[in-house]
Image (cartoon, rainbow, N blue to C red; front, side, top):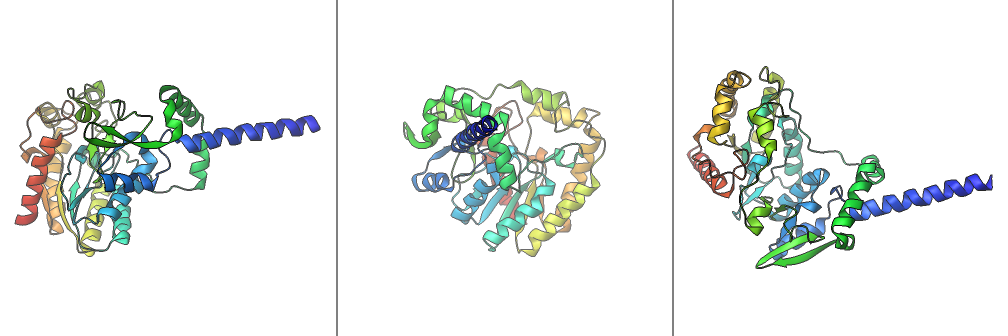
Length: 342
């Protein structure tokens, strides 16, 4: 009996040590540390993406909003993340944002600050594809935290992090890269192993900090051009339920006294041609081109079509999926013009 008790006690100690180590390292960015953004805001630092995991996107962007108290915000997926660099604007875009996430996100922002806002809302075409699912995490409770610190994936990620960057066990540090201030962990942003975030919520790709060409990743070709990825796969009809959810989110924004300018982020000519000609998408794309302006106009808001932005093929971070800083600047100028004219 004593042997069993000793075994159980020993196993409990091992589990507790594993959980504590995973909690301390937090290799997948489950736990957002508010001091990170406070320091980055005060000192003008770039934050390593190593510190901002999927479960941290929401609290990170809410704190950006809380600290900046902007007059204008950008909302959308990863395809809007380069819009920024303006004092009165905060980029609150998050990878995995979808139509179903808009209303709860708007409620949370309004609870933080009920002041009037201008919202530049980036509506991706694939939001109307019923097979695509958003993945912004709104519920973050004790059960999820315990599951995370005990998960095998977390343990293997912790082991890999310590192996590749031993100094990560000391937590995050402020580093200097020439004239750039970095909030980094294990010097992974400093060494070009991670991308980053600016204090206004906009995204910084590692090659932008360290030089080099654009991203060369076959993922984008697989996802869009061949339609076997999560975005445009099996898009057989425009989801009417999501159209209604978009209308509800716009009604909610109007009730707060917000102004909204809708837009769809642009694609390179290669993606544009494929979306407009492929049988898998051309019918739905034509329908959305009619539906989205009507939905926004019905609520008194402006909308800018993705084909109207004057971005060249060279003005993308990759092969045409994510606009770069130059294209993002053109998009912002068009949205500002729509805001004034509207």
